[in-house]
Each structure stands twice: as C-alpha cells, then as structure tokens.
Image (cartoon, rainbow, N blue to C red; front, side):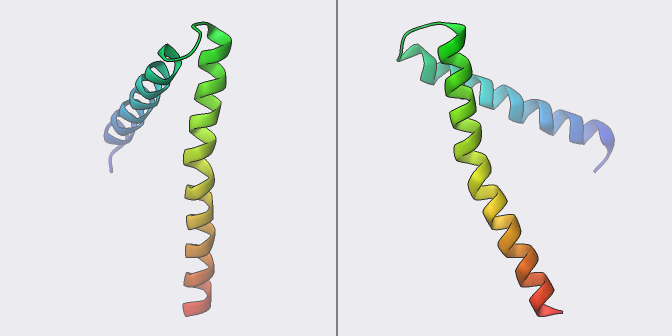
Length: 65
C-alpha cells in the first residue's frame, strides 16, 4: 500500500472509533471523562483480541518453519 492509502485507512479507522465512542457515550452521562473512559474501553476490547491473534499467528508461523 502506498503511504496515502495507509493514512486514509488509518483515518477511517479513527473516525469509526470516534463515532462508536460517541454513540456509546450518548447513552450514559455526557462529559469528556465519560467519553475518554468509553474510548479506552472500546480500544481495549478491540486491541486485546487482535494482540492475542497476532501472537498465536506468530507462534504458528514459527512452528511451521
């Protein structure tokens, strides 16, 4: 991928996370602290499985060689 395509994809991911966080925040009390707490929770719920899949994939590739 070219650099501009990578930046565009990253921008779309960030915008999607912000929209997801905003919709989750509007159900609760409104405020920047609630927004940031919800954002961190969403990032952790998405990040932990991605890291685990990445680790298992690396072990699989290493074992396969």
